[in-house]
Length: 278
Ligand SMILES: [Fe+2]
Image (cartoon, rainbow, N blue to C red; front, side, top):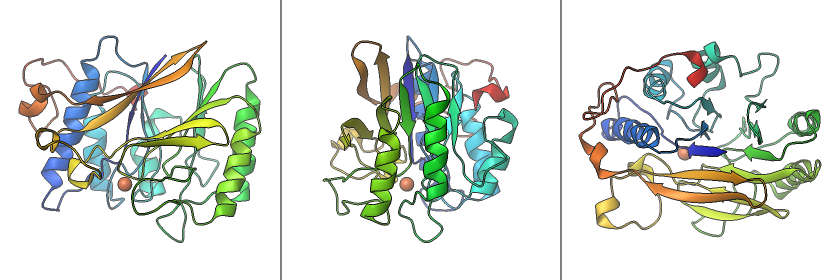
């Protein structure tokens, strides 16, 4: 199974770098579409848009509609749950019986679980007792498959960059960590939020963080010729060896991608707007 992870596209319509953010997003999707073999699924780990606005989501949805693989999205701290839910509601995987954007996908050899780590108090992560119970329920429904968990905020101490903790307290992280351990079947945790690449462990579970797709917001040192080239992660699952993560740089050939619709300039194809793709 192959998972393409993207994160922190921070789509805006009225900042000086708004066009660049849209281009970064469109080029990334074009690059993923050109992979052979292509991914089974694309997961966006949040901060899809920058201000949670409906018109920003409309732009993001138009870009994701170009993806060949099914797309699933998480909420980041810059997202607005209600507007995100409305933008992606046609696809049916966002439960309507919960305030939180959390769900499981069972269509693959690995069970995918998306968590909602948003806080109403700050940009840091939160994970209340209701969400702990829901996560334990989600991990207990199916008992044969390994589980990959996706979060916006990384649930481990990040030792690069200025902030080591991205949740509101150690206690909250401990509660989430215990819930992740509960089933014994979570084999990987994939996150965003930090805007830079890093890796660690959540109580022995391997965890990675990918940089922001928005190159104007990306942290860390990159060579000059990569300054406007997005970076994303491919996670390949092997039943024996588990996940291996590859960092991919969006190819220069997508530099000529038209901004207005994200359609590759040299490899045109009919866009598929079926809802199963996001
Ligand atoms: Fe972000």
